[in-house]
Amino acid sequence: MLCGSNCCVHVQKSHATFLKPKELQIIQMLGDENIHTLKDVAFRLGLTYSTLRLYMTQIYNKVGLRGGSQRSLLLWAFKNQEKLGIKVPFNTKENGKEEPG
Image (cartoon, rainbow, N blue to C red; front, side, top):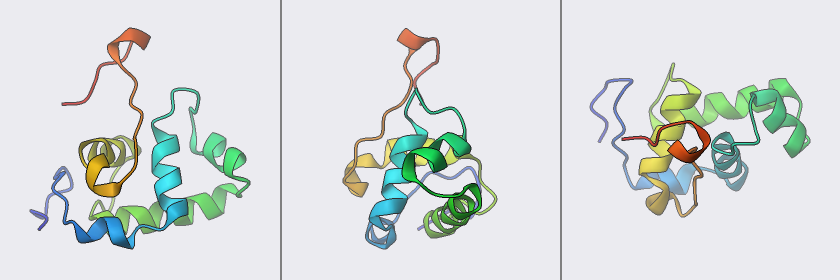
């Protein structure tokens, strides 16, 4: 159960079943070091920017990060990637960015 805070990274197992394959793909792409903006994600997926924003709103709502940031979503996904059944890349110290946690 979520604690009610926007910074909370707890996850209910049921969240993974409510995320659609396209939503999981978007989450994975957010951690890709070659993707720098949501416009990059939209371009790679063949979506308009506004369609991608709708997907992002749905993702935030489903995982309980209403009003969250891309960074908080990526951190949530990284910590819960096993439950989600996906591999979430995260920039490491080797490319100048620190690992989460």
